Image (tube, rainbow over the protein chains, first blue to last red):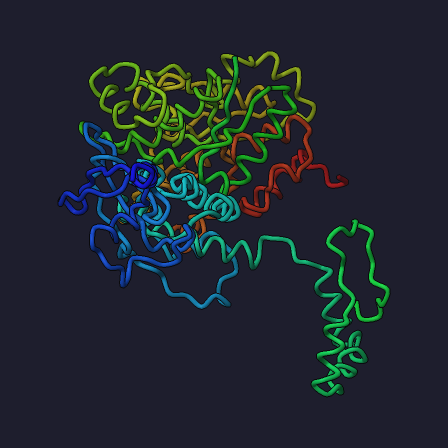
Length: 250
Length: 294
């Protein structure tokens, strides 16, 4: 049965040793850290969220043999490497200031007041070096110290709030919470308002769609289903200039 | 010479009047420079502890940013930033052991050995631009304005980074003379304003600041020019508290760049006098330096 053997060889990944919290496990080299931990027998109850690289619940730190550097990655996204020493750090305690957002007007002094530890930053850059999302953490903290909330919001945009920055900070800053406040202020006060939205809301309030909606509301279930099935749809190949025949309810 | 301009945090918040007037003036003088696109707080105060290398990381990182831009000079306006950056630069030039430790710590950045020159706006004007050339550019001389130059500490001390003689400096005098002002020499022009002591000894600091201002007044000054946002706080904004304690106040204080911008005939808006004491604008109007019709 030589053919079976060939197939088996083709699908079986090479096993490599990794160290989870100091204990050695042999795992297939193709797995992510998260899958490898499950392969090794760990069962995730917490420390695992979206499995898609956006929730920040599975941040992991590791080292490689012969290398003093600390590496980081999301367990669900990072593929194992031979001889890596790892531990997951799904949560790191960090002080989050309490505020009523309606009292926040966007003055830099308010951010300084809520997070005075901002000024303990010595620009060591450990936060940026550990960030699994490659956010320039130190740079947004530097921007906040000079009151540039907009820059901080923009630089921190990719933050998934995993907390690794806070775990490495010698100034004990909760960087990711401060960045969230910056993004909130940016969204509420510093980005231009969508003027067309105001007009649209006013139009709707003035009865722009009243007739269309009332017509739908008065239909029985069967008619509603028929109307839905028979509705005009944009063809998959339609160009930019396509418009529906019936445009009254647009 | 390729110049990076390093603003510093305070110039982006409380001392916009210092930055705005300086940048407008540099443009009017035709100086080519680029504001550093990436920088962090310099630390504001140079650490005096011998082994406190961590507080050198911030200023050295800023100097590396200048080097990364391919620039050989960094220009500062705030005298605290000047002092911190210049002293960090001196250390990186002269102390091989500490340079090694700092470069090894910052292994994500290129190595640095003091290749960048740190200049303050004032020594840039004296050594690179030239007072003669500056005089040619003056269209609105500060005729009749009796102004006392206040150097403070950090431009002159320690002597390794002093932009002029720490004992008998004349650079600021020459600068104001070039603008057409009547310069008032006074003994306290290099006396410390109290600096950060205002936080834990506000009363003692107020006494020191008041003494400096009185010295200037007694020598016939109508106003004071300075370079540092912290001096501006102690000598300018704290006059509110002096009113109560010493019956002293409304003494005009200017950043040196605001007077430069006025002398160059730039629009008054560039100087943001609304961030100064009200008396500052009044005096310039009285001297017809701010034209009422404009």
